[in-house]
Image (cartoon, rainbow, N blue to C red; front, side, top):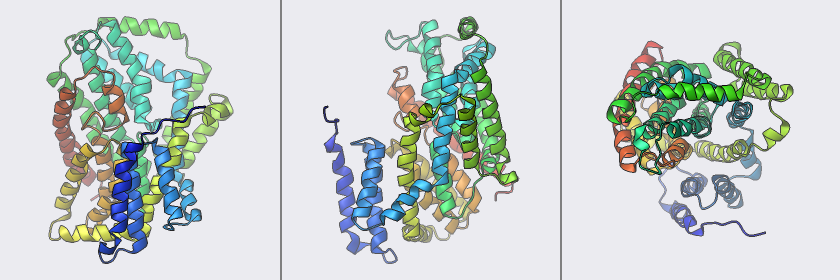
Length: 472
């Protein structure tokens, strides 16, 4: 065998920053213990490693955890407790659930049906593709899988049908518009459902560490109004600001009909997958009312897919994305919670709260949301950003007097919409931009404008809607 390629140069900044923080322990603020400071050094170095990735993110997380144990910051028993986090396992189970959509072909069939029904005009086609993302998002915590695995192949086929390709400079005919519309549709659906994006579940876990419980239904109810407005308005804005050359798409229906005919009738595995998905969705909605934990619902859904034969044990064991996520999410969430347990987050929230002393909690929330949103230009991972900042910002908001649930949910929404910044902001951005249909200048310009739109809709209208719901 040959050795795996490792970019050792990328270890430089995580190690350097970690060592600087570690050896500056003598200058640490009063109220921060030595072990908390050392945990901070390892955590920051690990987050930087997750961003630059000298080795895959799971490997970075493992090295960070190992160093924390070897250096005596935490015990091995405490370190392994992180792998028992229920929220992490919910993410894994939802990955397995989404695998059922792909294996059975149900996700592709849903996409083709939407194209057939709503694809007569290019704008309608964009709404149809976003509708596919919307339907599959509650049970697909990998928004990259939705955008890149389910919707993008349909966009590529449609673009080819209408002669739109970056290879010959015809991407603006229809491909660039559909790619950009789907990207923003994915951003919106990621904010709508708690289970639509892995960082949402990280935020829920971190909020729980601060004694703030967010149920699946409470997240959905808070998000539904800003999400519906965004789903209606954003594709239309993109159509006006970034118009496709082709406005009518009558061939889309014919193409979808042909593809559906090749797929044949709905198969038994597809029917079972659809039924299990509906069961999981209903139980997630009712979980807070019937006392059924959302993670238990995810386990139940996967068990039903295994018992029915839709998924095999081999499918589960070979779903590397799920196991990879379970592995490194467990470690990062453990480290973030450990900073809280060791007292660093309480100290930081108190210090930031004192710096904002005299401001109303509403002003504090505006400052925190804007800081959280625009700081994402410095991150290449939504998960890394949420893990690094969410807990501290939520603690600051609560210490400033903000209603805990309102602050937790609003910051959770921000963790979804800040993906609308750069081409490296999250997985869907990298996957869709990497297809080559959009220029970087267009991506940044359009995203900056739409970012302002999201802040108004989710931060402004969303706040008023949560007032109606009694969250503040």
